Image (cartoon, rainbow, N blue to C red; front, side, top):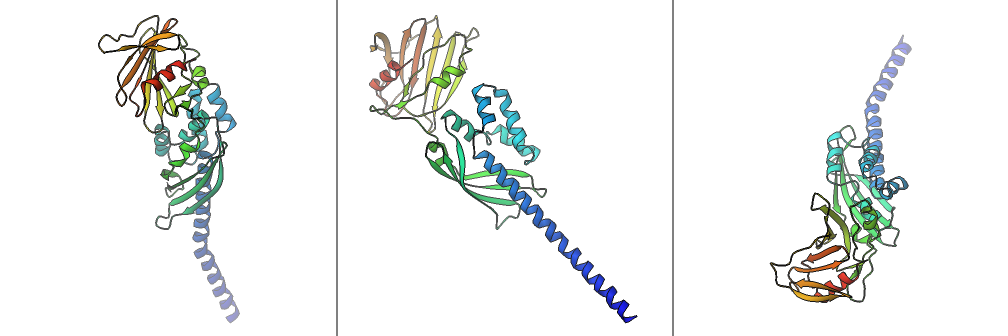
Length: 301
C-alpha cells in the first residue's frame, strides 16, 4: 500500500513539473521565432535589390512593385503596419536608391537582440556592404505584438547609407557627372524626347517628371539631390517660354544663343532653343555661378 502511495505521489510531482515547464518552453520557442522573423525582414530590406526586383525596375513594371513587397513582407507585418510601410516608402527606399546608382547591398555583420526594456522589441545593428566598395552602419528597433507580428520599424541611424550608394564623379569644375541613360529610358514613351544634362551642380538623387499641358507639349523635370537642392528643367515642344517679365542678358550656349536672368546666390534661369524644343533651366543653388549654369546647359545630349 505504501509503495502504491509513493508511486502516485511521484507521478503527480513529475506531472506538475512538466506542466510548469511547458509555458517557458513555448515562450522561448515563440521568442526565437519572432527574432528569426525580424532578422529575415531586416535582411530583405538591407540586401539587394534582388534579380526579381531589378527586372521589375528594368522593364519599368512599376505596378508590380507593390505586389513584390506585399509578397515579401506581408507574412511578418500586421495589416495596419503593412499599409503604413508601403505608404511611407519604408521598404523600398534603399532598394530604389541602390538600383538608381547601379549598386547592390549585402549584409556584412548583423546583430539582433531582444530589448532589455521591452520584451516585444528587438534592437538591431547592421553593417551594410555596397558593391561600389562603400560600407554603412545602420541601427534601429523593431517592435512586435504578442503574436510576433511587426508593428513598427524605427531607424535610429541610417544617415550614412544613402551616401554609400553614390557613384557620381566630380569634375574639375566642381560639377557632378550625371548618367542620363535611366531618364532616357523612363521617357521613351513621352510625346517627345528632349535632351538632358550630363553634368549637374550636385549629385542627383532622383528626377520627378511633371506634365504641364493637356497636349503633352510641355514637360518639366525636377532634379532632386539628397541634401534638398533641386533644379527645374522645363521643356516645350514647338513653343516658346516667355522671359518678358524679367530682365535678361544674351549669352552663348555653345553655338546657340540664350537668355540668362538672376545672379549667384539667388534664383538663376537660362532659356534657349535647340531644334524644335525650348528649354528653361532654373534653380537657386548655393555657390552656383553663371558660368557653371552655362556649363550645365552646354552638356545637354
